[in-house]
Length: 494
Image (cartoon, rainbow, N blue to C red):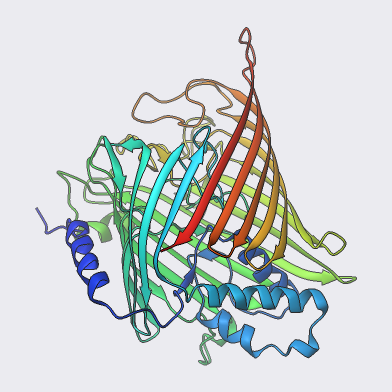
């Protein structure tokens, strides 16, 4: 069997990171990137980008600070409006806050698990405690995180999620670890890769500074980003330790236009080829054993501008299960459409999104259900620890989500959201270990109102989330349920 492309490096990596964390000098630089939990930061970035004050791509997370911080510092405050000055000041304060690294902790307590984990969320489980140490220098960055939770995957309640070690080589970052990723322009969930599932341990390569290349053939791309990585999924799968490869490129060829392309593949695993040659064959030649690879590919686009002083954005995302070789196009596609607008009277961004995750199973089949995120060989599908790596609503869902994001001050924000969901539309699933994991075996309608308030205190940051959910199962006697929920999350420093 070929040598594995991704050996069991994670244990070695963690031991090395622990030693490094104990020996390294106190941090002197800000952390390198913005994480998918920082919704208010993202809203301020998009506000300035809509006004053509930032030129960097913003729809690939973790989002590297480098080029963004440079542009923020270069802005002349005297030339900005009051709202623009406030957004710039909040972002610079957030960047400076990211220089306060070292030891920290987070404590979560909730009345129930977070069923719909979306961009900006801070808690997953009913209770969790995480302790972390983070450091950063010009060429090295890392985080050591250890957490215990009430939900044990594979019988393990201790986790090293969010731990990583990254090294900068020129304009590229090589990293190893478990980082949350979110690819796409939407505010709620992404079809291709979101942080709905726990982060997959990956070995990754990412462009550090997204500035445009001053080359005749590439100058037209404008600022651009690229990231790719190889990951290893859990051992308790139909194909244990299957591999995940994912890549994304995004660019801003015009000031108001951002375009992204994403490609991911499940392949290999215990008992199958895991070398580079196997990856190459699976990716471009259908594999040495055709049908063992599971690919998803797609693209997304966002256009933003200002009309009559009002910033707005229109965006879309398409993710496909198949590629028609004769017609040379993606087929069996799920899609997401969205629009947002900044309302000055409320100092808030309002968004509305629609997604459809029912797709065909093949070019010839008229079947529309139980196809997206499923696979005939990798029976667990495009999931990690039974959670979709893409949409938080899994397959066969029609969803409407409306939200309003209000940055109040530095590290203080308010996010209100309403969801109208139709989950698992056909009420059927593939047999285990596949099948819809959000509403298994039943068609469900959900109406949910949720509010999250984040407040920065002197000693830490408090996040409060409250939700009221009406669940309805058509055709079932007493098929209605009202579920209130409350969650508290506290982040502090030692």
